[in-house]
Image (tube, rainbow, N blue to C red; front, top):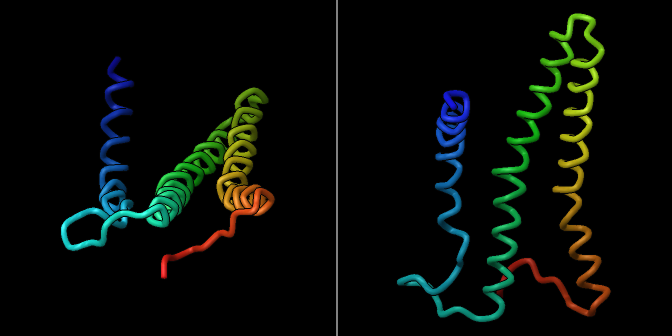
Length: 122
């Protein structure tokens, strides 16, 4: 129980500054901003994607790579621990490739359906 509370405390401590960037995800509807349109919805989705990839997936992948590397270093010849560290590193690299490649996959699927992707509103 203490380990779970300690992990939760450090997680909140680490990701609290990141959540400050989440405040600007919706580009309309607030005082002093234009009224919301369907174009703003797609801009919001793009902002959410950028937030997830830049501020959540990348730091988590760096942490996973570090943990996997440390596990391989301290394995001391234990093949089980070394394999676990290798699997963590492999999973982090695959996850990072999927996170960065997901925009390409989304754009390809949308263009196949006939949607023209626009990065910003005019």
